[in-house]
Length: 268
Image 1 (cartoon, helix red, strand yellow):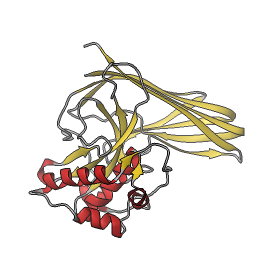
Image 2 (cartoon, rainbow, N blue to C red; image 1 turned 135 degrees about the vertical axis):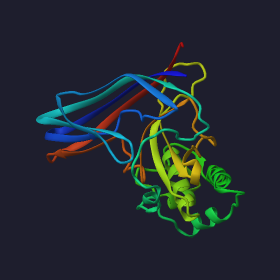
Image 3 (cartoon, one colour; image 1 turned 30 degrees about the vertical axis):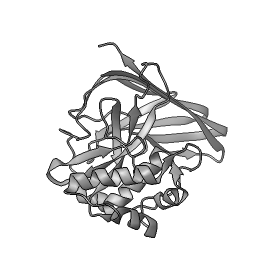
């Protein structure tokens, strides 16, 4: 599948910020399931700094904006050719050991409810267990936008029984780690409109390390493994660690933002 992606995030500061520094994880991953062409990143009024590929295989760009500045727009545009690898992350170069992803965070820590959910299923092997855990999370947390916040924990989402893709990913990560399997959060894009029309499509899912097979993606929010509709950006221990945009703003004003993401299928 050939996908055209436009991602624009506008930051507003009142009063104007004295300046800001951003770290962007907005370049699609390099692996067998996707090939990137014509990818551009720009920051209004910004100066590009150092760029590097980190130990997790993600491409990081640093940007600096000098103030005073009232609005900053981060714009991404490009094309990605994707193929279905049944969720398996093949030929993705990284140096971080999988066991690093056994470490819990504030939002992926377990409680009795998550432990019970994680122990409620059995699998014939590690891959089957990962599939069954994803199914269990999908059944336990209904997809309902607007009921959780960015800081909602996996335990809170499970207790509520509702959430969005971030909550499904956090819950699956917590359950997989409880069963002894490294797991991590993945940010990216999803093309889900069969008509091929542009639509909002920022998305997140989880990857579970299943022995010799390596990392396998599971989208519990949609009860499937990532296929050629998905574009992978980067990963981390949780949503905050894998955030596409991270940074520091200098000033005392309030920050607000507006995000626009479009994914459109193009003719081959």
